Image (cartoon, rainbow, N blue to C red):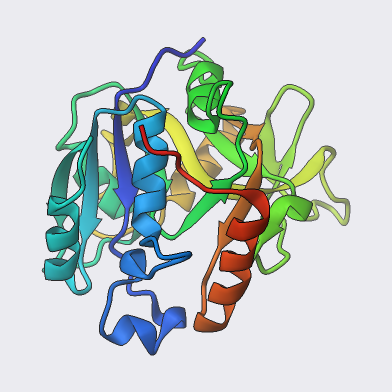
Amino acid sequence: MGSPVRQAMVLAAGLGTRMRPITETIPKPLVRIADKPLIDYALDTLKAAGCEKTVVNVHWLADQMEAHLATYSGLEIVISDERAELLNSGGGLAKGLKLLDPGPVYVMNADLFWIGEAWDELTNLERLAGFFDADSMDMAMLCVRLGDTTGHDGKVDFALGPKGELVRYRPVDGKLPDGEGVVYAGAIVMDSRLLDDAPEGAFNLNIYFDRAIAAGRLFGLILDGHWVTAGTPEAIGDAEEAVREFGSAGQET
C-alpha cells in the first residue's frame, strides 16, 4: 500500500466567477473564511500531513497570490504561472507536476476544506496516502457523505463500492450504480507520472477520472470530519458557522 507523500499541487488558478463581486479585486483562494484565506486551509492541511513541497498555480490576480504565498512558512512553495493561459484543472495539473519530482503527490483544490478531524490519529491526507496503491489504482480520491457537507449544491458525484471502488453516480440503462453516493472532497493521491501522456493546453481532469473508472482504477476513501465549500458571497456565512460548530481546519504544525 501507499507510503508517505511529501509533495503536492494545489489548484488555485480559477477565476472564481460565482464569488463576484468579491473576486473582482481579490482571487478566490485569498477570500477569508473565519479570518483565514481559503488557500491557507489547504496549505495547513498539507503541512499537517507531512508534506514538504507544493506547487500552486496562479492566473487571476496572480501578483496577489504570489505575494501572499511568499509569506507562508513551513512549506516550500513553487509557483506554476498560468498568467498567459488558463489551463483548466487537467492542463494546470499537468504543467504544475513538471515542477515536482516523479512519484506520489497530493492534489488539492484551493477553495474548499474540511474540519473536525481527529488530530490524535492520522489526518485525512495521511489516511489517503496509506490507502493509495499504485499497482491497483490510478488515483485515490477523498470523498465525503452529503450529510457531512456545508455549502454543497446537493449533487452526488460518485458511487463508492465495498472495496472503495468508484464509478460515476448516474443512471446506466435506467438504473443507478450500486454503492453509496458520495461527493468528491477535492483531494487526490496519485503518481505524478499518470499525466505524462497529458494533452497540450487546457483540459479537464475529468478525462483522467473517467479513464480510471473505465479501467477499474479509481478508488475512494471517506473523509473523517466535516467538509466545507463557499462558492458565492452568500455562502461565506454558512461556512464560517460550520467552522465555529465543527472546529478549526488545517491544524498548523
